Image 1 (tube, rainbow, N blue to C red):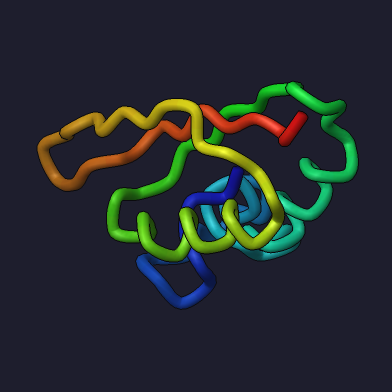
Image 2 (cartoon, rainbow, N blue to C red):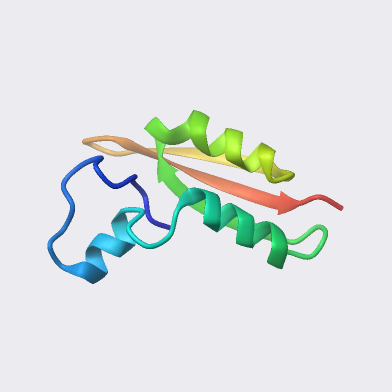
Length: 90
């Protein structure tokens, strides 16, 4: 999904890259809303977000009734990201 909110970091002037990296046309809320609607009970999905959005992402996941099965933090030179393994309730 898009990693960052619009206004966080430099927005790429190329529209496709900007949409892939920032919430230009798709928000975190929309991603989780659609995931909840499309997943069958027990279905799984993975998300990758910067670690600095951890609290926001976990709050939205909980709000939409999804469950974090596992989470991995991947440390990189400049910053870290988190991989969320999420499932729909049964």
